[in-house]
Length: 426
Image (cartoon, rainbow, N blue to C red; front, side, top):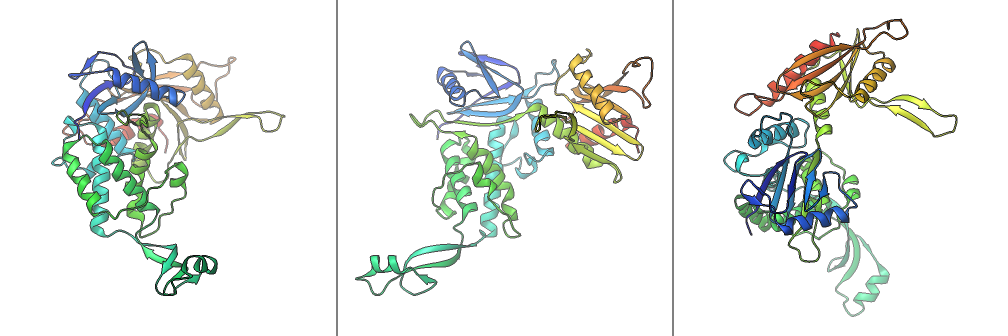
């Protein structure tokens, strides 16, 4: 097992061949692998190619290229270049929306500041599988066919005569058996084998080895999106959900180098705009009063054609409804730094205001301090709307969110307090 090289960059940052980042040089092998991966997937959304380099887009997370790990971090404050700080922000947001459970890995087993988020995903998966092993692997019924020495199930006459003409002590039968050999364990075993191959963290290496020693050997299966779509969890297999979720991320995002086997690519990347939207949404849902509804991606018909099947709809990020009206929010992961929002964003908010008959609408940004810049849509044709024409710009503070200063729950409560104070609905 060779040790990994960790490069940490920010979203929208470019790195070129020979650049030294965090004491690690971006080498030709890593660049060529990223170029090949970009071409094989007909372009990937999380980075683009530049002259002798790559430029990362609005996606954050981690890409492992051979033994080089590139961690792409969010950044909403141009003056704060502390990578540990922004890594902490990212982990907390992933945790809040259910994509990562930071509580499942102890500080003693893995130190966040000296490792990548990829290591934390590996550690979380390992801990989940260790728990399943210690609790006892779940068994399921399955059909089995083959030669046995005792007659059970239904005898398959054609194959029995073909294979046992000279072996009268055997029976070729199809029967039901109850054991640990089923699809959930196929997936977990395949993921463990993958981790043994790509893990570069010495602290996790021995734990993976122990798991492979004690985990029953399973047949290798081809894993696709459809493999996970057909899974059904019951009372006995409910504890498998978290481990299977991580296995899905790892197996579907792994792109092996079939030629040399030295420059495999594993990408766990998240659209920062989508992550920000989900984070604000779950924060509001966590603390909202029982009589208020908070909905995400509410669709409303906008235009339809007499030509059947042709239509257009609108879908704002978050809609808050109470007994006294509703408020529409659109989240944007960008620091507007005191400048005005784009005309396109304001026109979009005006349409939301009209079609949802909202009391008020707002664009929600990250920033260095929590504040509201209140604006109004102008009077149309000399006639004011029946409801208030308020369209605000709300910035939510992303400072002081480190573990020792403000827990994730307090940050989420601050977000709820600010937005519901603006909403003024009950």
